Image 1 (cartoon, rainbow, N blue to C red):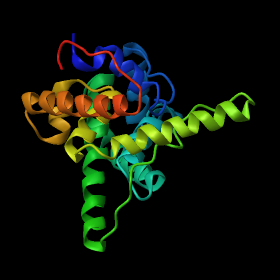
Image 2: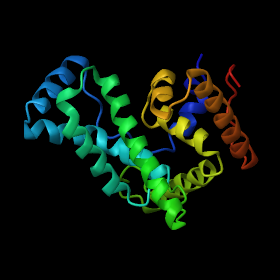
Image 3: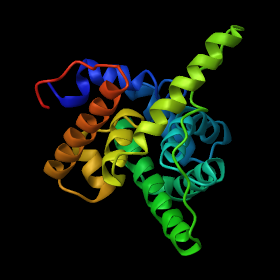
Image 4: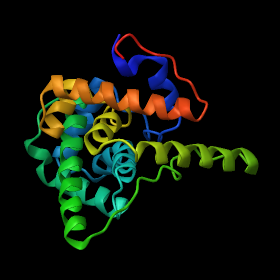
Length: 213
């Protein structure tokens, strides 16, 4: 059993951003991709609706200064190069998050030159409440709390966990995105979730241990 397929993954994922609209099936994606590559406006819009919330969630959780602007920048880059893309939906997702990660690295460099530090904030990642103000407030506090814990992880650990949970990428895909070996990604995943588990246990929220930790 892989590390993030455990109860720990489900518990953490429940407090992270929603992934947006469900991804299309293989056949649907083939038609959607073909329409987008033919410069069909509705197809561009559909791709954005499906994948932009997930990209924004990743960027915002990694402390992007302007997550909306950066998300738009990512999709502009995607659409400019879309005609050259070949692959299925998981391959598209991996390609998309490679671009998002690279744009984030560029922004970090600009922040470093300016001396800007932006903490991760998950307080905006919640489903719209159904009118229960108290329940909505508690949900926001939970997200903000988990977001604070994630900021205590190392940068590489955060990248791996967020790409695994939010982007739903495989180990090999994450390795390609971050430019590390699959073995290094597995080690970062193990250490990151272990550190997050210890932080949660310190706050009285025990998580079931998987066999990989």
